[in-house]
Length: 160
Ligand SMILES: [Zn+2]
Image 1 (cartoon, protein in one colour):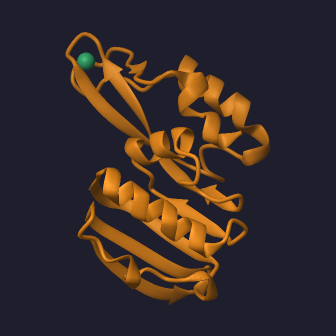
Image 2 (spheres, rainbow, N blue to C red):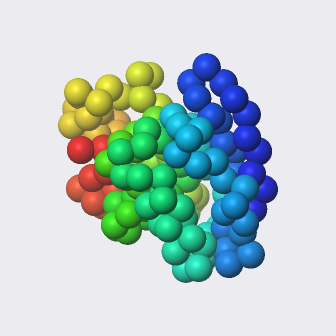
């Protein structure tokens, strides 16, 4: 895991790259004193169970009320937020994430990017989710309608 840290107007921007495992050095990660934190998850390729444990411990050390913004969350991050207690704190906001779609005709999977303030507003989440279900993207290969490749009530539960 590579940790790039940059001070910005939004706070401390953290860009993670690679795999999060038992070999990842969380000593490189910012602490509570660096908050607010903005973490870009886009280039995290994989996390294993040890990595998850390290992550939860780090998040816990930050304190549950520390302001954290997660950007560009791939599907696996969304899944962990939904199922793993402690993966995020009380004051974590998911600013942008990917929604998985699947084309049954040509078996193509596609992740579609969604960003707060552009594709949805926190006070209007239900309507946005309804749209994402009812108006799926066209398949880039066959132009057919793709299907949401997740259980809507579970996948989007982190937004509520
Ligand atoms: Zn298709």
